[in-house]
Image (cartoon, rainbow, N blue to C red; front, side, top):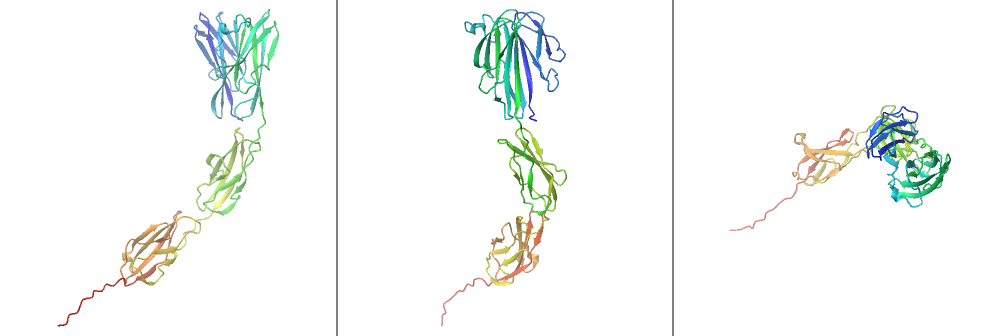
Length: 415
């Protein structure tokens, strides 16, 4: 459910002076072909490129054809919703001279373990991991060992833990592991032959899927829905702290196609067309990638209404003595609330001289020219909505006044 998987990367370093042939075997799988490692060189193994089946987990065995010392480094890589993340790795072995006096006199055996400490939470998927480290002396006499712990950046986190291992006796380490949350590795150095295993256990806390989307708005089966309506629903998640995203499926087909993914709220405003029956569905997904699919709902949008017929002209119809520079206005609008564009045509009383006087979204304008005095004019408003419907208003008329008279007074002369 969490789409999370792990890859183990393993590097085998030849720390000796001569070449060595190495044969690797994954538990329960056929051995890989033998490979030669030159001094101070390393081989790389990977659970994916080595062709292991999906879901494989198990041990990794190495056989060598001579006594050259080998260093083995293990890396765990996690891939989840956040992408590839390096989870833990084992650092390079410590130099012998760096050992504290009184620890293992000469470390001729190295063991490497990738660890996750007690109660470490990895990401947001509530996986709690516990690690138990068990070591066993496989020789016939007692063995001195030191255990060091490192964080994922190679810094020493705690230790060393000094042990004396009796022959054929297992020692379990748990309370000595780093207590803080993080990703760690352990290096075991010993003056004899020891074997060991790191047991990683995880506890998956129960995750409840998101609530089923419900309470649609518009209501299921609603008719006459405005094309400007927003979709709404109830959602959420029963687990406190979980976040939910919504995929919106919407279209004229049933089942509807995906319209938008990853929506973060429970309302959504799509682009709708008039007179269409729409089907829609919401799929809710929480941050653990658990999903809940809602039912398919439907609604029908209202058929588009043409704009209102322009009315209440100013100047009024058949008005007289109108100013030569009048302001024009009218009543318009749209019954669906759609935006309206107006085109105003006018001219002298014959439509032969009609021209476009005005174009805009406001139901008023003032011409940028003057009218002739004592002249009859006609005009009409064409209203267009954004759905392509047009309403042509009636033809109105008005007559201008005489305008201004200019008088010239001359003196009279009497002979």
